[in-house]
Length: 227
Image (cartoon, one colour):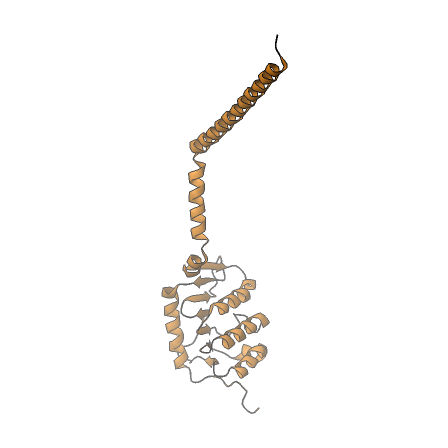
């Protein structure tokens, strides 16, 4: 005959055994599931590809790397000119040169462009803007904001008319610090292109600009004569 103490001992042993069995089953299924997932990942090779993709993404999205790498962008419409000019002016640290037959090609009468030029001239004590054209007609008719800037920064913003024997002609470009260049040269597929961080491309144009600049007679007065 079984007494009460033996019955309770057997019940306790059975409960412990059941708990141990359940724990072992859970642990075994967890190990099996981990092993299975590990095998799946290894068989597909996705972890190694993900690591490689992350490394490539971090390298290409590095701001320092992209900021110094040469870039070329095509312009598809005139509406893109003013925003690109504003962006280039923001990158300038020393010199901005613009050559155009009448200075009408680079939206110099637009308020955002003039504001960007003002910020550039105020933020860099050695900043200079040189505008070279074959004709001053557009500037006289549509360059009111440009005139105001010229009066405020007559020592740093200069406009010259190219010599007759060395005209600007069909050349139309904006140079920023001999490294960035926006060229308006229409082709069958675009109206121009923008080069960033490409001194070898910009340098010949900067040399041609300086030649024409020094061949021009003098800078136009900030205030019209007689006023």
